[in-house]
Length: 98
Figure 1 (cartoon, rainbow, N blue to C red):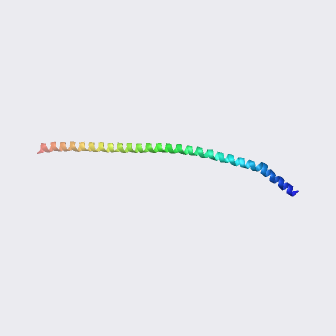
Figure 2 (cartoon, one colour):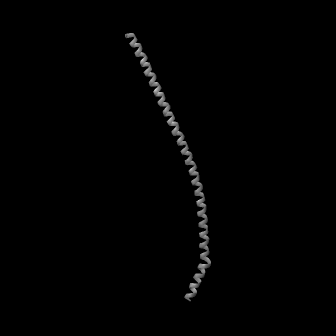
Figure 3 (cartoon, rainbow, N blue to C red):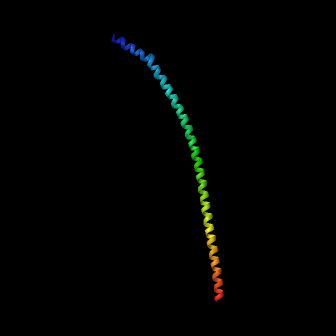
């Protein structure tokens, strides 16, 4: 009788449970593939966006450096003009006292 019970359990496992397990494994594998595809698409979108942000950062850096250089040039020009004005004033004063 024990053999009969074991055979019944074995047959139940082979006929009912094993196919369900295989079907579940197939479904899980399909879901994993779908997840992988979606994650790859998301990763690609993130890479594109990060690339765009990097390009904007490079542009902004160049713009800031250009603005800084222009500002420095203006400061130098203003300083040079002030020195020239002072030289002219000193020359006028020296010519009056000479």
